[in-house]
Length: 263
Image 1 (cartoon, rainbow, N blue to C red):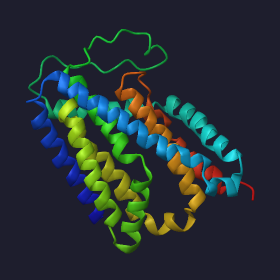
Image 2 (image 1 turned 45 degrees about the vertical axis):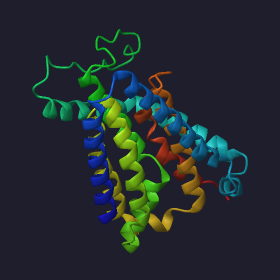
Image 3 (image 1 turned 180 degrees about the horizontal axis):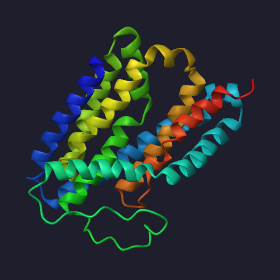
Image 4 (image 1 turned 135 degrees about the vertical axis):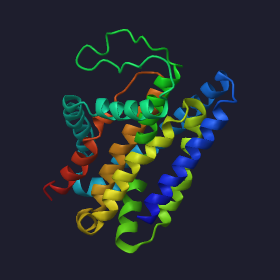
């Protein structure tokens, strides 16, 4: 668990530092930082997403490897929308926000849920600090938890005690969360909580997970995660409010499909 604890600490430090710095920056500067981060996140997502065309998946599934990733995203998205994982993550952010910002104005009503949520007007301005808290928590949680380093690093830490990969990830996450917090407030710092649950759980279960996780399965996971990261970038640019959390089941479906693929 050493690597995960180090990773979480880096996120908290980066988040607090960014929030303190952000209050001293003009709104246009914070908006510019968000745009730069969004573009950078999209580039990272494209780099990982192209793994769907890599040799490992080609060996197992041939040209159908791309369809495995696409199918996992579609089916995973349907499952996620039915369960509404995004809503659950948002509710967690709202509860944390209420604990941290008790001295704020009137209660912040959550976004509408259900089939009509996209056609209702949003009464909360985009720069409302209470809304930015929730958005920062949700987006930062997805960024720090979705990616191959979170899986590989946690497995390595659990199996061998070597947390070198997670130390590298801690540095990257700390810088990313610092930038997020400078634009969105203190919310991103609390992404350390879901990270502790995810990476800590993988580390504790490493002895059972590692033997069944093959290179093609990891490539499928990486490609699917990369596409989710692109969605996060588009969301940050306000191109479309993609509910990335509702696509998270695809991260399980893609490697499982490769594992069961007939050889």
